[in-house]
Length: 83
Image (cartoon, rainbow, N blue to C red; front, side, top):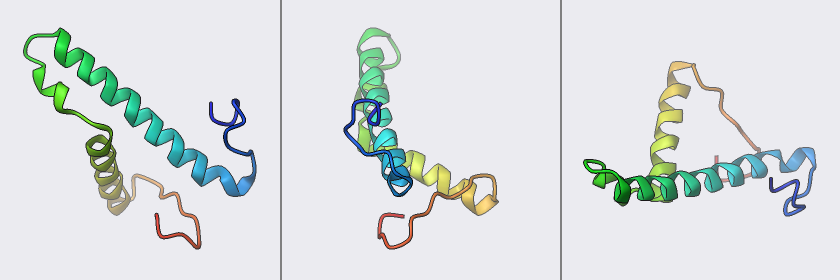
C-alpha cells in the first residue's frame, strides 16, 4: 500500500523499510480492532488494553524464538542498528 500510494520508493534497498513500515501499520490495525472487540464482546475486555507497541514487541519476541529454532528466516539489512 505504501508503494502504491508513492509514500515509499520502490527500490531493492527500500525492501526492509517497506517490510518494517508494513508491520508497524498492521500492528496499528490489529490493536485498533482488538480495542473494538474488547468494547463489543463480553469477556474480552482485556483486548481494550492492547496497543501497537506491545503487539510489535510480542511478535518480535516470537520471531526471535523462531529464529533460534531455525523455523523463521531473519530479515537483515547491513549498516543499520535496527535489526
